[in-house]
Image (cartoon, rainbow, N blue to C red; front, side, top):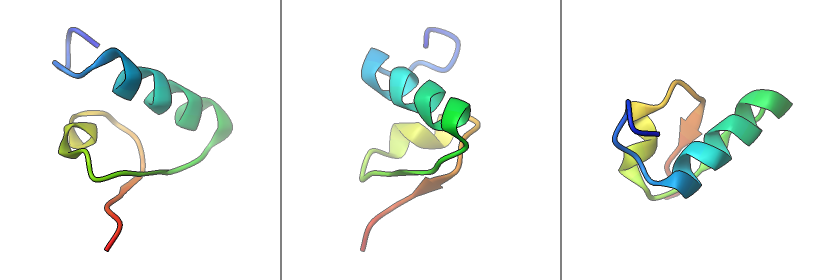
Length: 42
C-alpha cells in the first residue's frame, strides 16, 4: 500500500483478486500501480 501510494481499499481488493485469480473492474486509475489484471468499464 505505502510502496505503491494507493488507498488501503485498493490494496485490499488487489490482494483478494490476486488470491482468487480474478480481475478488478474500476474507474480508479490508481489500480494501474498494482500488479493485477484491471479493466476500466466503458
